[in-house]
Each structure stands twice: as C-alpha cells, then as structure tokens.
Image (cartoon, rainbow, N blue to C red; front, side, top):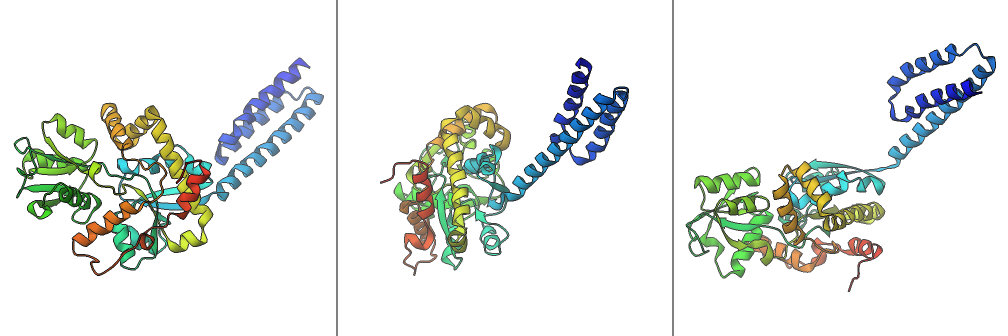
Length: 375
C-alpha cells in the first residue's frame, strides 16, 4: 500500500503542471508518465489503479484547459487608441497592466495613434474608443463625427511654462519663441493660450514653435537656445527646474481642461451601453487605485514610462493634483476646449452646447454604482 501511494503521488506530480503547459509539451510528458507506469508493471493491482488515476487526471486536465480557453473567448475584445503613453495615460496603462480590464471581462488592445488620425479610425471601426478628450476629438465632433466625450481622467492638465534663466517674467518673454509639442491647436497649446489670456498677456505677443517628438525634445530646444521658453510637463518640468530654468506660469492650475479621458461614437453609447460602462468602470477603478497606492503607481511609472524613481515620485505627486474625482465630464472643461478653438477663428459661427460634445450619463451611472457622493 505504501508503494502504491508513493507511485500515485508521483503520477499526480506530473499532471499538476499540465494546465500550464502548451500542447506541444504534452507528448513528451505523457511518454515519461507511461515509462513510470511500465516500470511498476509487476504489480497488477497497482497497474489497474494507476491507469484509472491517469485517465481521471487527463480528463480533468482537458476539462480545465477547455474552461480556461472558453473564458478567454468570452471576453469582449476592445480596441482603444491613445496619442502616446505619457503621464496623462496613467489610468489607461494601469487598467491594462494591473488586470482591471480582464477582471471586468474585457480583452483590451491599446493602440498608439496620433490624435489627428484617431477620429477617422473611430468612424471607420478600426478602434472602439479614443482614450482622450481634447481639441482634436472635439474638433472632429464639431465637423460632423457623431461622437461624444464620455469620461474625464483629469480636470486639469499638468503643464508649466519654463524659460531660460535670463527671462524671469512673461513680459521679459514677449516676442520670443516658445516651444510646444503637438503643434498649434493641440491640448497644450490651447491651454497656454487660455492661461496667457487669464494672466493679462496677449498670446499673439509670443512666437509659438511646434517641436516634434517627446517632451525631452522641448527641453533640448530650451537648453540649446533654439527657443527661449517651453511648455513642458512632468517629469521634464522637474529636470528643467534643477537645470536653472525659470517657471513663469503654472498653466494647469489656471485652466480647467480635460487631460486624458474617453471618447466614443454615439452609436456605441446607444447600442453597447453595458460594454461602455465596463470600460469606464475599469478606468475609474484604475484611477482610484492610482490615487491611493503611491508605491504601486510609482513602480508602474518607472516600468512603463521609463523614469527613475525620484522623477516618478515627483511626477506622481503632481499628477495627483489634476485627477477628476468622479470622472464625470464637466461643462467648464468642454467650454474651455470650444472657446480655445474659437479663439483660433474656428467654429465661430456655431453656438455649441455641452450635449453637442459630451454625454455624461454613463459616467454618472458608474460613479453612483461605485459609491461616489454626487450632487
């Protein structure tokens, strides 16, 4: 009996690992098990019981693998575009990396795509959602795309206007070149225009220069003297300060404008509300986890955004100040986007309402279900 129990445990140990192995390894494993079984052939009783054990375990493995495969097939496949994996995309990246989308029954593919191209991809069905609410998505809606902003990641954007050491005020910077990423009409450019107006300065007094590439390219342009000022976001803001550049304007604190969010077709909102709510719920849950788990989030920033730990911690602290508590789109943010577009001479003949550009119903439902206190 002791010998029989030992042999059955040996067989069991081989099969415990089967559920984690691909099929091309099973032939080799089964041959090894068969070799074990044959080595014990002297005991007819053991052979019969071991065979029953073998059959039982194989059937159990197949049933387990089939259930796992079926659960993967049942997940809703969702494609979400994002202009770039920056700090504003943190809730999106967290929901993917921490398995929150999977926990909500979705197999989500993140696709990096320029903001200017995303509306056409959304309209054509190449993507299901745009992870963003900004000038590009709002402009597309105003020009005929039947889409709405349905969730905000942040109420504010985190941008500072930095200048070379000899420029200490906005007045000093007049007539000088200011580097911006994304070009004229992008979220950061629009925010700078609004902030300058609020400060009593005229945006036309500054020469806006679009710099392609990442935020570090703006810092290089500032360091080289190609531009005198630059609109930068964390962690470049902290690096610029350490290098002696002056902070002239905290643009994010002055402008209520969405930084990150979610845009969907009206058709998607109407015909797939359950799926859309799952996406919103996942993003809001990830944002809540970001808010309360600094160490975990700093690790994510270090891994995915390629920052050192000190810069990641500073970036996290700054990002915390911009987050929208509930994720429900607000009128001030949408109004500022419209106003900024109209200040460029676009859509000036239109009277645009909040509901023309945003639909806050599903985000409100999710917020209530998650226990937020709403007015």
